[in-house]
Amino acid sequence: MTSDWAPSDPKLSSALRTAAGASYGALIGAGLAAAVTIALAPPVVVPALLMIFSSGTGAVLGYMFRHTAEYPSP
Amino acid sequence: MENVLRYFFFDVLLSAGLPVAAAYIANWAVVNRFRIHDYLGDGQLCFYATTLSVVTTSGLFASKTASLTVKISAGGTMLWVVILANVVWALAITARIRDPATAELSKRRITGVSAALAGAAILAGGIFKWFWGG
Image 1 (spheres, rainbow over the protein chains, first blue to last red):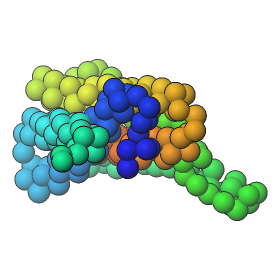
Image 2: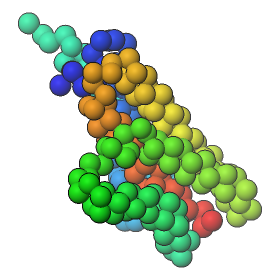
Image 3: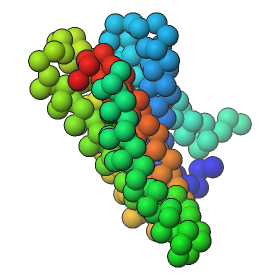
Image 4: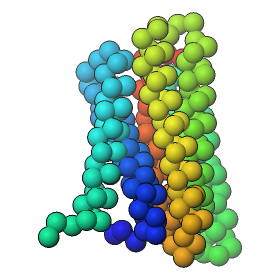
């Protein structure tokens, strides 16, 4: 799993995973925001915050996943 | 509603769908093998996401009808997508140049991540156009 994410440079690999996590998180957040907007018609701040928050969560998960993959617990 | 449908037809279907459809037809006719990362593996969708987000933000800020809250919320979110798309593209291309042996996997990676970003930009643009009516 690690091999396809620039394994020769841990920093680059970590940055890539974080950015990819943020991107997938943004997509999930946008999907959620679209569903919420259609169903509830909330203020504009709600979908915006959903997207940003989801993207941030994805970034953290991507970063953590890299560390889990690289340094497995004994 | 009309503006959202117009947005999906011109900004999504024609802008992003048409080039992929043309590539698919050309491949089907000539080599009979279509692998999507052969066409989108250089981060084309990162550029699409950037362009779509910037154009949406530009229209938003030029709008007379959009409130300040809409401008700040939607503009901030779209600019976040722009930043992400640029960071993803720059890092992915750097990784490919650094590791030529994994170039094929790198193309698959860029295709997946850039498709996610383009999807996010498309959905966010549609949502905010709905609010702003632009």
